[in-house]
Image 1 (tube, rainbow, N blue to C red):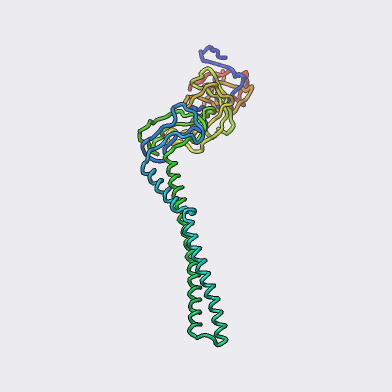
Image 2 (image 1 turned 180 degrees about the horizontal axis):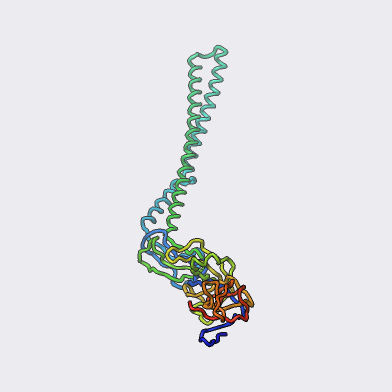
Length: 348
């Protein structure tokens, strides 16, 4: 393709071949659903239930945190809940109901006695004082009955309230107890474990890394100048450092919509079309996100192009050209020169 002219300047003619325009990216491999596990409370580790490499299910216990005060608090609330349970206090309600029945019977009896005394009084039998005594006894019995009913209702509401309150307090305490037992959020593998029994753990420092042990995600960084050309579903060509002689196909699956201010890059994710047989988190890789591919394009080396729009022909004349796709070495020429035009390598 390259030749030398009489003036020892490098020359070439455009070539016709396929070109792929792509965006460079690099990153590390992560297991799917990978996350850093944190304790929700601070304390001394009582037990560690897993080792590095262990397979876990959703809800599998990872570690427990010791807190004797919380245990005693829960026990006290359990006793309070038992003490205030409705079935335990059923006797108090039955006693109050019996008193209501008793006052009701007394009220009915005094009502009958009053009616009998009224009939006698209508027949001029008995004294006015006796009638008034019967009326007073009935009113008193009626008031006692009403008061007994109100006390029964108040006792029923109070016992139900105390029972429900004790149940809720115990549930809250049991929920707090669950904070002292940290469980896995995903089905997968424990890839890293940073703690041992007896050590102090807090919500500020992760104690493990856990993720899927069957599916992996390619997490990579793309420069801010290139991110606008990247779209979901675009093909990605990947070279893993652990498989340097192989190129794997992947597809862009996620584009995080905020830029890292320090690195001036965006994070994107891709998923393998066919995963390699053995993978581990944090394997590094380089990749090219394929933006466009064109077959049988007219191409010249990029170093033969001046200011992105000019080439120099064999006669030394500058010719304006229209360019198309570019890769790291070649650029497509859409118009301005023919395939037989001989070009000189310009001085940059």
